[in-house]
Image (cartoon, rainbow, N blue to C red; front, side, top):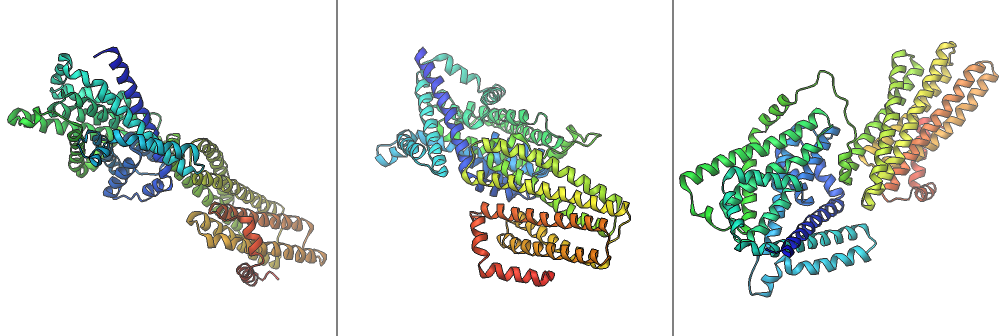
Length: 578
């Protein structure tokens, strides 16, 4: 083997790893909402979690990436520790898809059809199609598809370069002795673990093993321990990712490690018993790309079948090794690890935004109660809620800006922009709850009383604003378009109520039925209520724009439309706005 073979091997490995990285990232981006949908179907059912982990890993071609996502989910509270176990096990099986794709390069035959099934022959065509899609298409989805094809073609060219560069090794005695040495199971496991830990990808290390099998020096007996070791080596990525996370995230990475270590120990015991008691001739047979893919899949599937019933034990072991701290850890709302998978980071962002919106709406309802029945305790709760929304807006805004700088699809970019708009309105809604509390405190301190008529008017307009808030929250949580469309007619009714009650209060002041100070507080309350309904309208607009409905055009069209007029008349009658 010459220096040029070594250079060719280095180039092949580089192309292989680069192609795998490009293809995986492009697959994540192209999957987008589909990936979020898979993750959204997670339940406490471990089998569902297993299928989710398998599906996600098969899509993004990386069990390490899936496990890092799991650590991020658990750290952010998006997934429980119990849920993570099935996903981790599914990821181990999903990663075997790569080996099957790479095994196609071993296809041989005289037929043109058979030859075209070999990726070495059709990769050039895929590369050409990929270049056309990536360079000449403007659509984000087409560009991602182009990158997928280019990544796959690069991966296969790298695989082919590795295979050709190691071909001279078949005549090297030292190389043959190396794999004879790896027939020692412990050395084989150690070698597989170290190589995989260095490149942080079991799929890539299996691909390298498949390339080395072309030399004829790799036997099935030496390949099996190496494959077992690769499962341990891939845990390094999740272990590194768990540094600085909360206890449950660290437990998830420990479960990943213990699952693979225990699976390898179990596999080694069975392998040793079979080898030293039976020693079947198949263990001395030459390994090729196809049977390495079979061995890789069989080992991971058997591990899952053995370990899945023991998942409760794995969870208990993880909790025992990483016990609950005496002082409760602060939950990490958004994990930067998820930014590597923008579609998933967006799911985490939306969850936090929904929590923020719920707090904002509830704070207003609490503030309405303070006006009618003053309570220091409730005032303190409202101030605490407003502090939370300020904190949520800060971390969400920063996180979404980071997310927008990542490579995201057009749809994901649009949803990130929608969330940014909505959280701004939610924060300002919470600000108005403080304004209402301050009005209540002024009424209490100065012993100001509203007349019974004013109290009834406040209950009427606050009910209308409360309904607008509930509609806005429903539209956001459930992506309910009809709820969003109902907000603007109701907002116009709130405007009418504000003007109507402003005039009636002036009349009461003129008739000396109400004092000047009460009038100032009343005016402040009406202004805050009207502005709250405006923010509800803004949220509706952001949701409709996010659903590809031009909000301003919609309002312009609907205000003269029968549906808008019917809703407006309904709310006018409901709240006696005229």
